[in-house]
Length: 283
Image (cartoon, rainbow, N blue to C red; front, side, top):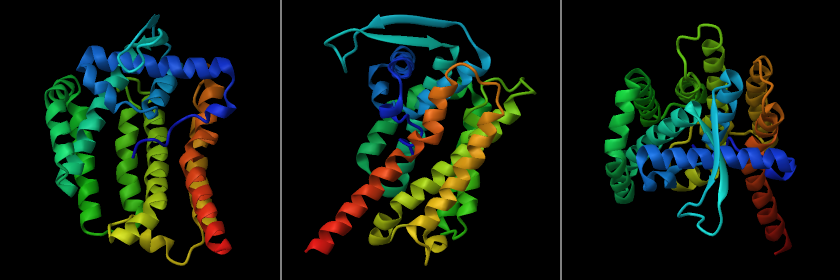
């Protein structure tokens, strides 16, 4: 369920876009240094939001620089990184490994099995660094698999489970009794939105394949506008929590992501379906 927590780049100022890319490049660099070159192929922009939020909350010391990489060797690019970046790189590896493992167990995709095997040693290192966190993530994923295996028709069950998993990612300092509970709740609300959004976008394809979809029963008889209202309510609950956090640094950049960027894939799919419908009407 990657690719939702991203910026609407067209609405960013040049300074915000540069900052966004620098954080992303810092994550890419951290993956290479901590988990090897190939691990960078698992990186998405989603974890950049985690870096932005946790750096804004805890203001760690940061490192800046420029370098080339094998993905973009033509020119040097700027990066920024911190202890938060390292944490996000580890969590990225954990989620990528679990995603490949899930694809192998569910669909018997040989490529996913090979990718999981390639990441296994690095995953075990992350598990040594964060034993409780990784155990929690594994438990939530096992619970989610069981929910989907039994064909649960209540979408809240899977959404709550995935939300708990996401909430755990946003807690970098469990000893922080003031802000960790609020960050966990924020992450959980964001996770619930992502889970339902993903199901809504996959609904058409899952029906054709005869695959499980968390919102299939709920969406029966509902219009696309009604489903969008549900998604708007979910992200609204998330943004309300965001606005209660003591965020100053990169606040507008993160608002771009939460208020606009998270709708990027939804809007693209809506436009595709509208175009498809118009072509069908013309014929």
